[in-house]
Image 1 (tube, rainbow, N blue to C red):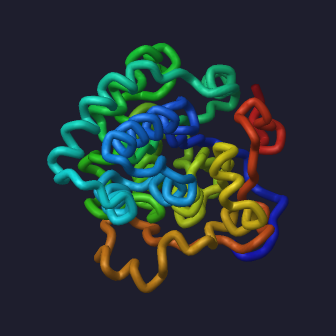
Image 2: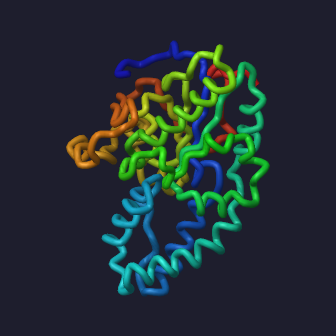
Length: 284
């Protein structure tokens, strides 16, 4: 994976993050967090910290946040208030630009492009956030929606480790075996991971998949001048020496390897409206 490539095979599967990529829920997370911070006379959440929270499983994101926030309330009080505010804020989530058109075209692509979701969000929150967009999310088969609390993902191995994306690919291949046994299974290099977060990009690269990074302008500003490191998965979101702490994964291909600068496996887009189907040999 080290050298630059232009002879990639056609893409046969697209695996999507959700928060901040398909829907504007990252704005809801920020608004809720800032409400609690202000109620406790603390400064608003800066992008330097938010960048570390994005894409990570809840427990790990919570640890990073609380070390920074130093709130004068108990953890239990924070959780109760956070749950209350999120329950309301999440009901107002909407699709981000280009998302509906992209999903519709991919659904109708020929030859078929398989699709799955891989989100660090727990299932309950995913259901609340997407409740008003059931038609849009109907392109994803129920068993190809992988959430942060999914039993199929080994505990403690969230993004930036690749397990959730490798599990999403497993669900696609299980579907192929069940419904089209004559069809070859999809290989990681035939997948695109769509991500907005830096840990998520690293997870996609570690999974051996191509990556489309579509960051929030605030996040992009935080990584100005380091965009190529992000695309290679080389920002050090997960130190090699820390991987051993998570134990051995039951998922083949984890922890995987990050890429190299300018190796051709990843690109950055301002919005998903800019996605170029022909670049990935997808016919729509």
